Length: 217
View (cartoon, rainbow, N blue to C red):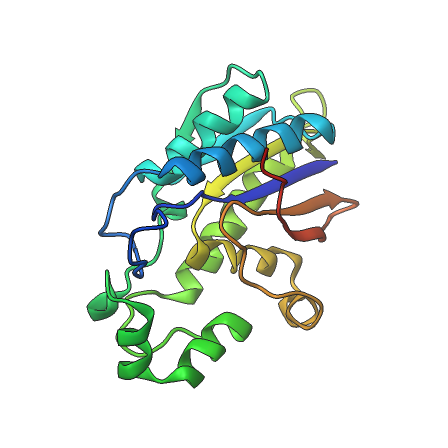
């Protein structure tokens, strides 16, 4: 069975900062709480026997740092492979704008549709089909291998950690081919520093758990 753990990076704004919509064009590091959230992810993986065999992240600092701090907290020494497909979406003219400013431009309903149904608001530079295909391709890569003896595709038995961002993570459950059922049961948005867990067995991906928020110490 392949286990895919999807983590949203930790906080990038401190208590004195004004949060904004940080997208693909803004490469900022974690703040202190973000580091603590990353460490909590690592402890959660260790405590729940979910230690990864391989780790991937977006190319952005906040995701790489989250992966690195999580690995250290889990007492693991693994490389972090970066992939562009896990980079946050581009918020277009709303990049680095406060939520109040964004809502004033596109309205609350557009934000609701984004958070409930992953419908991209006008002006944001994101193609859901491309994001979904990125997840599907990655899912195929980590779930099957070609047996040299039989030349047949066989299921892998690995745990994979991917650290990404809010706008990308919500599309991952499309690999189950039943996103509508997922969206009825769960809030599709991952909280900052939270985890989603998907498993592959008997030829099918399933959402095992979603929006797990590890406890901070």
